Structure formats: structure tokens, C-alpha cells
Image (tube, rainbow, N blue to C red; front, side, top):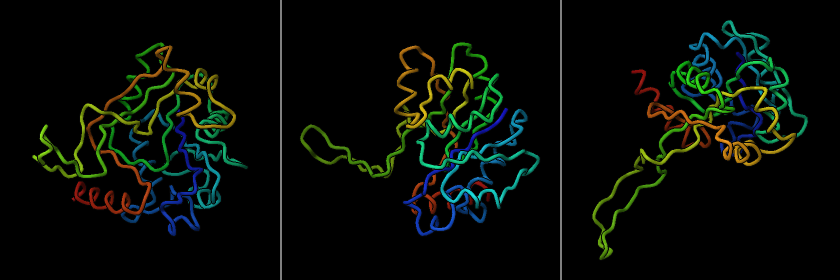
Length: 232
């Protein structure tokens, strides 16, 4: 089973770190995001190769990883122009065996999810085209609680809402089925998922454990602190 890492964006909110490299090569505690991801992917024995769906500064990825890394084959699906997440996935899946499943993940996500459990769940749901990781919504702001008289009763700093879920940016997909719904150009979130929902072809895999995304300098700082605390 191959894993596709979406790596085509310019990472504008991480500049100047992305001036000369794609986002997956941004170091988190001294190691690129993509190295953290590949180390995580290797924990699922079914993963035998990686395809970077890339564009911006993609040569830097090739120079860093070459054709193999930590026992996994590495391939590069290069966009000549931005295709959106849906178009990028479709182009990359053309390099994957059509029979079976593939793991797809955003290039800015770090997690300790047990991927094999998610893949096994996907395999057990016969009618599913995509299984989506979902994680609890965590507010980026402090929350103020008020009563009916508008009196402030409590403050809570960046709370987590366990009953509100967001897309965790990791998917296990049936390759042949998904290919039918992917656009040549456009985002999977807007062009593909809305078509699958009416037929019940997307299932969720809820996860309450460690999950981070690196989309800004502030995100990067928070991830580094939390990873160090977890490891130490």
C-alpha cells in the first residue's frame, strides 16, 4: 500500500522558512515534518512506498529523500501548475496500484494515531470509498461564558470541544472508487467529498490523541514545545 503526502503548497504563512524549501521540509525540533511523517507511516507494515504530490520547490524533496528512505520507495508526482488537492491526488494516484487502498495525508500534519487501526477499519466497511480521520475541534481563542443577564461567569483558554469534529487531514481510500470522483483540477474538500456524502461513502475515524498541524509560525512553536514535552 502506498502513502501519498500532499506537498504542493507554498507555505506562505511559514515564510521566510519556506522561501527556499517546500513546507514538508520545515524542521520540527531539528527534523523535517516529512521525516516525522515517514517514521509514523513505517509503523504500519502494509506501507511499502511514498508518493510526494509536489510542485513548489519539489527538487528539494528529491534531493533530500532520493528514491528510497528508511526502507520505503520514494516517488514524486510533480504538478506543472497548481491542481488543488483533488487534482494533485488524482495525478499521484496514477502511480499507485488501482486495486486496493492508499493512505493520503496533508504535508503539514503530525500525529501518533495508530494508522493500522484506521486502515483495518476502512477495510471492514465494504461500501466506503474514503475513511477520514476526524479530531476534536480546539479553539484558537479563549472562550468567554456569559449568562442570560450578560454577566461574565467563566473564562476558558483555548478549550477543546469533544463533540465538534474537524477533518484531520489523513485518509484511507479505495483507489479505484476515489479516482472516479476526483477532478482534474480542484480541491477534494469541495469537488469530491460533497459528491460522496449523499451515498454514505465517507466514514470517519475519530481520534482523541495527539494531532498537530503546522500552518504558521505560531503552530510550529506550539508543536515543538508539545512534542518535546511528550518525548521528555
